[in-house]
Length: 381
Image (tube, rainbow, N blue to C red; front, side, top):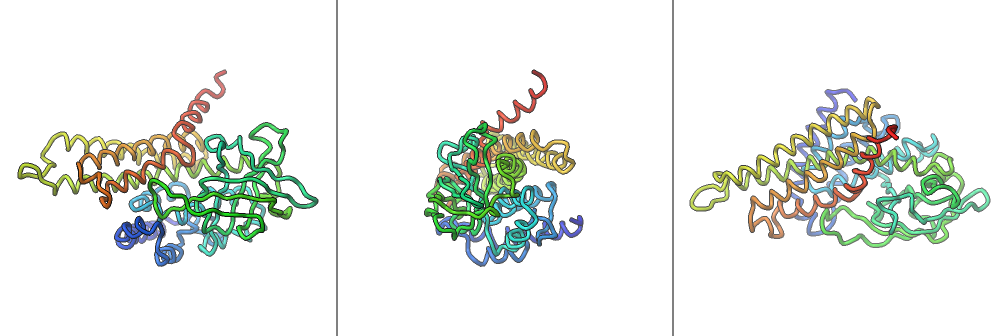
């Protein structure tokens, strides 16, 4: 996208987030839902398709533009970004990277406009950090397939129109080889979606269980019409998603630090602002230094991703560092607030709970360490 056009988009999103979304954060927290008018505004701004190709109605942002947008979206409750996240990220990108032209034309314009929501149905009980252990099965039935199994913690499942479902299609193949991906409409008989999970944080960003009871699918539901290619499709989507999540962590850390600085400047102890205390200044300084390092890491990793020179080490390193970093920054923000920071209704307290999930989803910190270690050692033995 043209740089000047992107700058206009960035300014519009920054203004909208701070003027319209931030004032409604308490409402989103209380109702566990994002107001419809915010959803419509996001669609009008093209945010349901920021990373989808322009030829299908998206904005076509490259990775560097994607992460800069995520810096702004991360300033507010993660629930707002989550509305559009699966369309632009792991579900939408699976279609972009692996779908047939017919599948792309069928779904990508609807995803880009926000008239359809897609979910990425990979995680299962016992197959989260290691998706190669999934047990959901798809068995050939004539020209089609029969899908059986269950998924867990599926983002946006309760509002989804399309599920990108990963299932084992060759039980005799190696764990990461015999997996295929399917495009499953949520209205298909046998698809059941549970109620939204009651989570520690990130209220308004819904996850739910999904089950498949002998769901019959046509042959055209096979993503890319390629059997046993699902694991690669999943990993390709997750790699880009991890860099986007790292950028969101930078945005949330920026907000947490801002809350801490403003509180330190206005709260008083002993007749003067607590900002005069050097140990309070130390908390703020540590947070700023880590935030600056995280932002720099994300931008560098995004440049390398766009250039094609590093699509694995950089994203995993950024996701690992930034998801851990945002938790430390949020923790320090609570510490600066003292007892007030432990009270429900305080922004610092909410950000503390919201930040914790980033170390778990789209690959835990432990999984990122394994990826990094294996990549570094590749070719040495």
